[in-house]
Length: 473
Image (cartoon, rainbow, N blue to C red; front, top):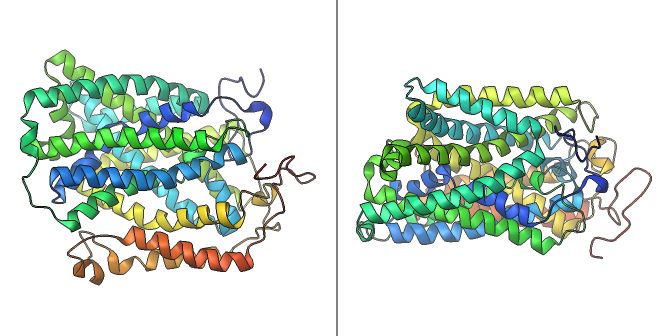
């Protein structure tokens, strides 16, 4: 059996050779549509109402945020076919082989947090279907289902994405029909006065939602042939992520504004909205299917990020299949344990988690994109990504300092439940910290890296050869 046809994926953080590339850019649309058209995005949209936004303003703010964050996220996706690498391994070109461990550890935390929230919601749905009251039961079942998909790997994840997209579109179509049948939807609007602070919070929630996919979006485009059109990869990823997210978040806004009990019982309210027992069970199955797609991405990416972090200190570019499976099982087990702990106060913890992620990943994303598109101009020395003695060195001080600046500059603009910065108070609670971080980090890194970054003349794929084509050819 050839590497490209084996049942269980064998590659981890090593580059995918051209002979194993397959698929088309449209597969990115179905994957990201399925990933975003799901219950956690519904909750993210509902948070805009929880934070005090008027429904129409929340929907518009979420759309703006989805588009802005989606642009950043899709630009990362374009790197996949070009490099043939998982997303975070390419961070070594900016931070150094070992220096990239800092953002890698934060990415692992992000994966665990998202996996845990998905486990909580899916566990609730499984328990309702099975008639079991023990919260841990549904979470464990969901963890096992996720594990099977992730162990098989890339091909099965994409297949599940295509199937889940069709089911999610039908399911959400029915739920939206029921929403308009059961509630007077017009009453959701105008309940509160417009506030710029809550409007910007809605923008930040959606932008943060999209940008948290940036650290692993290229993981699912790296098997595409290297000559795949960058524009097709960008638009397929962007449209899938933005359309799916906006539908789910809009539903979240409406149901939160019309039925306050949704905030305390997300799964139960959707089941009741669906109608009779059979329809409710179908709704629960829809929730589980949607979450399996995204949790598979979280566990898959989490595994590769763990391997990337550890391999930096072992000078390795791949690991055995047994190690890969062990990392997957460990990650899923930990996410289930976190889910069991967090389930008692899910909504408030999820809100804090989303805002924290936006804080730490905005400067990372700025550094990665500025370097790839404006400094290196799509030229990467791939062997040097695995060699501390190579072009990128052990630690890249300019990137690490700019990353720290990108986080610290946000502090006066923070508007968390536990802390509000001085400038955020002056702006009546509006949180624009992520925009400040994006601009400041990009400027600092661009100026500094132009003088210090070592850039190859063309793409280097092996220690003895370079690319057969230029970045722009």
